[in-house]
Image 1 (cartoon, rainbow, N blue to C red):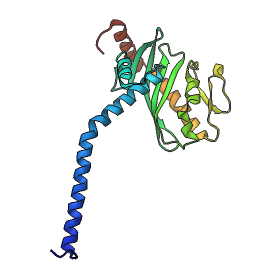
Image 2 (cartoon, rainbow, N blue to C red):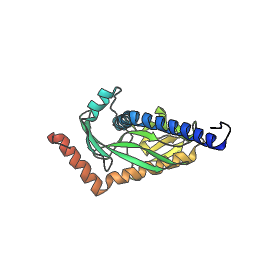
Image 3 (cartoon, rainbow, N blue to C red):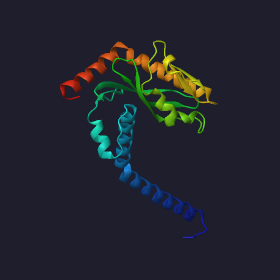
Length: 210
């Protein structure tokens, strides 16, 4: 076959492309279970973090998560933490550049926040992306939940008034987090979700299957 001919070139490109696609497919099949496991563990760790439960190794995370009553379909979770029942809910809402997703945890009486964990966002690094930093998330630990919702204001924090320090230069992200959190609190208060969370809490108390 003429190595400078069109047929040879087409055949060569086809063989090389097929080889690369085959290798990529085999690599994907070989790692897909590992990827799924990592995603599952990361999700479980995020829920635990929002609940204020520390766990680092895979075994610790799985063990601690096993003490949670969960409705994965609705993204609802209940657990006893420090002799009190807490509820967590998965949230998703529009940020400045895309969806912000994570978990928010409150006390069973809906009087206080317990914690928040951001799982994914597309906010600007160094600006809106700072919602992932500990100083921002730690503000929600023990923060009272006002009846009219929290306010996120850059450069100003007043826990008694339900005002959380926002991010200077990222007003859009601060406003987005305010809307997302307040909407999630209202969802916690809805009769259907509240009833389901109470069912999960009951399963914890009885030690029954979730």
